[in-house]
Image (cartoon, rainbow, N blue to C red; front, side, top):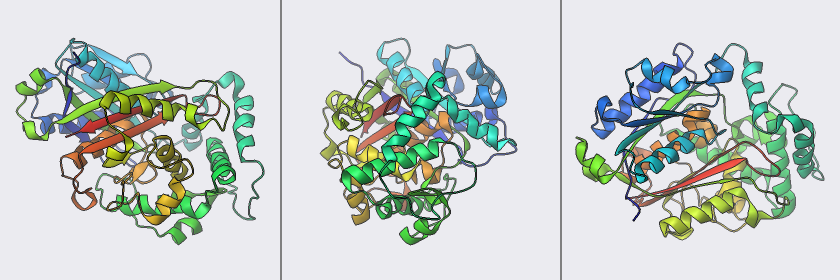
Length: 413
């Protein structure tokens, strides 16, 4: 019989630019907050799972980044597992911690993610993303994905002459593909971004907290059509941590039992061959279907959602693959306000990646931090009333027409 697993504590630094802090300080702050939240002592942690996507490339710390980071603040002598799984690194670490608990190898574990992505050489930081696909086929990969955007007229003045990661052009091509197939509009993408910027105003841990109207999003500096800068996530530093435990582990902690959140399901899927328009075969759809089945919960039962939106278009695509709306339905739903706090199914009340920030290894754990806060009823002005079922989606990398990996988690009270 499968063991019940609970999130007992969460901790997260403010996401943003932390020029004067080292990676270990960001991780240590998050761990300290999670321990206090759970009513736990460092010595009670039996296994640790550390996620980082950029520390080897940007700080030169290969091989044992978790052990090095944890030694700096005294989390030592226990099994430590280092996890790197593109932008899904944080939730991959979380899922491995849950598996360890379900396997009976421990009763209390912690998943930690941390990144320091803002470095002096910004071009080097942006170039790091080029490793997120088969580097031996980089030009072939780019050509395949950029072709998705062909056939959509690009308005004059909607392309930036500043250097950005070429993944921004690929995100834009996905936008245009949705425009051709489903009639998604630039205004609908802007509606998602404006909604998330307005949510972020009420999140003290978000990198950006400035409200935007749809018109202001559209008028912000162009990246590549239809994306503007207000629709896109920034480079981010930060740390996040999640403490998970069994029933027996929960009984050992001093925290309130009533604040524990149940892990109803975890699921992970990786890319498989498909045609661009075979949407039912998409990796995100497959991961979502597994999670719903394991939890015995359907999309209509979901109260609140955090999805991976490195650009606002990511939220539209995820909402459709997660079956929260039919394919092609997310743009109009966003424009109607259905994904806003107070709407039918609020998505990214934290502000999402484009506002809260995207420190790769900490991103998924930051999403879990938000959902646990929502299920506890502790989210203040961004609180989703009566939240009982929370859904998280976190993906990364690129293989073929889709993400290399997608994790989906369902939490309940």
